[in-house]
Length: 277
Image (cartoon, rainbow, N blue to C red; front, side):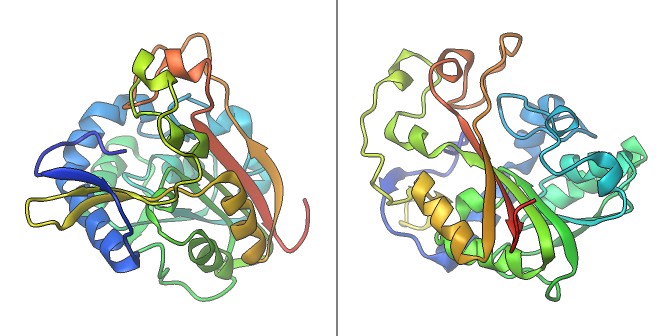
């Protein structure tokens, strides 16, 4: 859920289609990118691939594959934000990495970090529902909480990403663990009691005074994601639910050590195009 209450007149659980969701996403991220990077930039790192609030790092997890194998591959990061993950890939020697994000302001932060880090990342502004690439041009696609939680139709999002993957390509993406939708978005004791139906797939929508959506986040169950992966012609090879590490005392919105040690906060799906690997 959003952690920015500015301009929000009310919160609702109601339908929201592709265009409304995309418009709300652009609006929210353009307005919130500065605060987001100021608050979470240190945790994310400028040149680091963190899969979620638990702090699982790709350098240890290797969900994308061995770095030596990756160096000869072409990688797409969907919903790259300020490019921290893609920049880490560049730092370990991956020659071709491209990041896409719906927010121009996030990409401006990417350019700022490029200059500071010495690891420039090629980026473009685009909606993940309409990627500006030809078919079968990437070996790997990845997304760490980027884009997929904000798209209304899981199948459509994955079909579009699968389209740009080469045969036997690999897709790895993380989202808020679907079970969290049954619980209040609260890092404290109140967040430990289920109050909503896990099966209620209506999105979470923040509206302005005129009823326009200014933030939309969509809920898909674990089964929804599995079926979407299959519908996209992908093969699910792993589902990672990171445990909260003892040394992580970081609180990020509704994620916290209290909740993280009892409930899964992140789901990471690992899939390949057409074959198991």
